[in-house]
Every structure is written in C-alpha cells, then in structure tokens.
Amino acid sequence: MANRLSDLFSNSRLVIGLLANLLSSICIVFINKWIYVHYGFPNMTLTLIHFVVTWLGLWVCQKMDIFAPKSLQPTKMIWLALSFCGFVAFTNLSLQNNTIGTYQLAKAMTTPVIIVIQTMYYKKTFSTKIKLTLVPITLGVILNSYYDVRFNLLGMVFATLGVFVTSLYQVWVGVKQHELQVNSMQLLYYQAPMSSAFLLSLVPFFEPLSGEGGIFGPWSFPALAMVMLSGLIAFLVNLSIYWIIGNTSAVTYNMFGHFKFCITLLGGYVLFQDPLSLNQGLGILCTLTGILSYTYFKLAEQEEGKSKLVQRP
Image 1 (tube, helix red, strand yellow):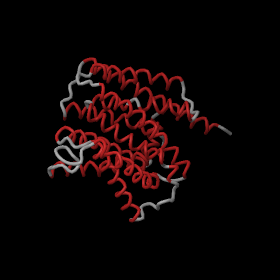
Image 2 (cartoon, rainbow, N blue to C red):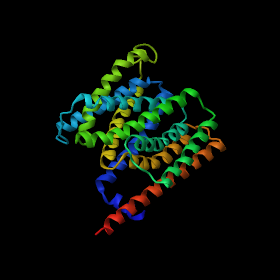
Image 3 (cartoon, one colour):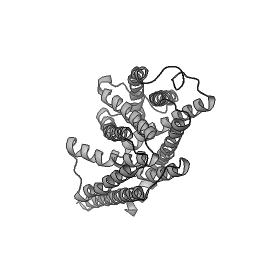
Image 4 (cartoon, rainbow, N blue to C red):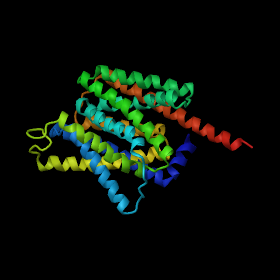
C-alpha cells in the first residue's frame, strides 16, 4: 500500500489534477449551499450556468491550443450528455433539500452502485473482501439518513436519483473516452453544449422566468457574483473529473473522493451549523470504516497484481 501511494504521488500531473479536484469540489459544495440558503437562486438555472461556463472555458482552452477538438457523432454523445444533466441537477437538488452531512453521506453510495453497474453490465469482477466493505458503507448511510433531524422524503428521493445517475455518468465517462479515443477536454467540449441545450429546453417548465426567485428576477450583485464564481469552480470540477477518470478509473476517482468526504462533512457542521445526533455520528463512523477498508483492500489488490506481473517469466 505504501508503494502504491508513493507511485501515485510521484506522478506530478496526477497530483495536480487530484488537488485541483479536491479544492474545487469542496468549494463548489459550500458555495452552492450558500447560494441556496442565502439567495434562493433557482437550481436548474444554476446548473445551466455551470454547463455554459464549462463550455466557454473549454472554448478558450482550445483557442489557446491547450487541446485540439475532435469531430464526434452526436448520436454517440446523447446518453452521456443526458446523464451529465441528471448528475449535476439531482446532486444540486439533493444539496438544496438535505443537510450537507446527509448529502455527502448519500454520495458515498456512488462506489457501491458503480461496482454493481460494472459487475452486471461490464462483467468486471471484484473480490469478496471488496464486496463486504460495501455493507458498513450502506449501513452507515442508512443510519445517518434515518436519524437526520432535518430528514425529508423529497431530499432522499433527489439523493437516490443523484447517486444512480452519477454512477452511470462516471462509468460512461471512462467508457466513452476509450471507445471514442478522445481525451477529457475533447469529450467534455462536445458534451457540455449538448447538456446545456437539453437543460435550456426544460428550465422554463420548472422555474419562473421573472419576479422574485425567477431567472431574470431582481438579483443583487453579490448573488450574481457568487453564481458566476460557482460557474467558474464548476468548470474546474467538471474538467478534473474527466481528467482523473480518463487517466485512472471511476473507482479510483471515488477512492480519492473519500478525502473530500471527511473535509466536506466537517465544513457543513462548522459553516452551516447542521445538527448532528449520536446515531448520526455512529452512521458516519460506520461509513468511514467501510470506506477506509475498501480503500485499503483495493490498494492491496492492485499491489498484488503488480507483483504477479513482475514475477512472470
């Protein structure tokens, strides 16, 4: 395990990508929660702004020759674009309707769901030890959600949908990069505007266009500044997700997400005074135990696999 971590951090590009994802992912959670709590900005419109800023950021990158666009068939991108819409929208709705603790713990279920999807549809195999670590993760999430004093059914529906669509999205990102032979920027460059178009067609049906709380409502300058800052950080989050998954795997991305898990939980209780009961604390401890066990066994298996390759004549 120590050698595996050493190899990981000896790759400076990977370290930079992981750090960018760590900082941007933590910031986006707190900034979006701040926007929902203090300004009541509409969720789908905020998501649409994230998509548009992401596409504009990539457009600037390709004009600066940071990457070269590659022509892709739109039909091969439709499901990825739709899953991207669901991933961001349901995740934001979960954050809007749940405490940060419940929101973050629900996201921990992404790893078990990814394993189920990869086992059932992509015929990947996982050891019994890895599968057993999913038990405390799932139990911990259930404990925390059940004893959350701000528990609400709508929030849990959004959290469940968010986990499922996020898992599909993360698996498909890796699959599409290999299938279409594109890098993270090339794929996101074509997918972001498609997602924007899908979401733009839905926004008028779900959110008011004018008046208090409307898209074109009387928003203050601080509110608009926070929204634009959220968009810029979302660009970094989206780009780093694609880069990490494309250079490692969806499972590795979620392993790294466990560090963000702890920091975000702590920040939620400090910044937003989210209440925490004893049973919730036990749920968090249970989930963390499963997460750490999963990470340990996964690293050990990868180290063992490397050793077998070296020993072959």
